[in-house]
Image (cartoon, rainbow, N blue to C red):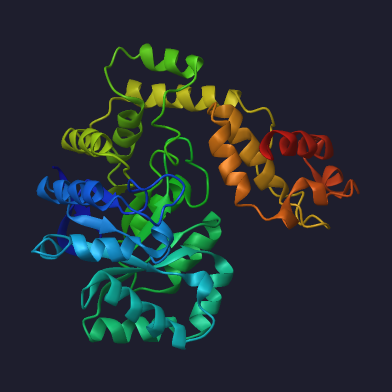
Length: 378
C-alpha cells in the first residue's frame, strides 16, 4: 500500500480508502448485507494496509454502521481511522445533533469517530446547520474526545464550496465527487485545488462515477484506450488519474466484491503523485471527449432554464438521459431517474415554453423532455 499526506494531520492515509456503501447484499435489498463475504473484504483491506474507512447514517438503508461496528471488533478498530456522516437532510433543530450522533456511536460500537462529516452539504443546508449552532456543538464534541476532526462531503456548485471552506477554519477534510469525466462538475478540479491550497485534506468519492468508468466502455472509447498500448483496466486508468494529483489525499471506492477489492489494492500499490506521463493524461482527455461526443442532448447544465414554473428538474432529467446514452447503460440511468420525484418529471410540463426562451443552446427542451421520459420511465 502507498500512503499520502492528509491535510494538516501528522498521519499518512492509504491511497485507497474503503467506502462501506456498496457491499455485497441480497438481491433487491441493500439492508441485507451478506455479512460473511463483506466482513472478509473489510478485514482483507485493513490487513493489506487500508487505514481509512468511510460510512454514513443512511448507507445500506441504515445497516452499514451496524455491520461495520461488528467487523471492527477484535482489534480492527484500532488499526484504522473511521469516518461517518451526519444526515443533514434530517436535522430539524440543535437537539438532533446529539440524537443522531449518539445513535451512530452506538451502532458503530465505539466511543468516538475520527472524522465526522456533514453529509452531502449544500448551501441551504449549511446555513441552516450553522443557525442551529453546529459549529459550537462540534467544537464541544472535539473537546470531549468524541469527534477527532470536523469535515464535510459536498454536492453543490463551486462558489458554494469555496464559501463553506472559508466559513470555518477548523475543517480538516473535504470530500468531493471527482473523476476524469467530472473535472468541472460540482466542486471539480478547481475546488480540489482550492481546498488543498488552504491546507485541507481532499478525499475523492465517485472516482469511477458510480461504476460507469470501471465497466466495459463503448467500442469508440475502447479503441482510444487500445491506442495507448498500456495494459490497464478502465478502472485503473480512472484511479491512477486521481492518484497522480498531489492535491488528492485519498480515493474512496465502494467495492462490491473481493475481486474488485484485490484489483483496487493492486492499483493503489502502483500509484504515486506525478506517476502519469503527459501522453497518458492527453489520452484521458480524448476519452472524455469521446464520451461527450456520445451525448444526445447538448445541455451544458447552465440552469438558465430554471426554475421551471411547473417544477420540472430540466437539467437533471436531460443529464440522466445523457448518462444512459454516453455510457451505454440504460439501467443505471433508469435507476437515477427512479430517485427523481414525480413532481419533477416531464409529465408535469405544460409546454409553456419559458425554458426554451431562456436556453442559450436553443434546445427544443419540450421535445427533448418528452423523449427522455419515454426512455427513462420504462
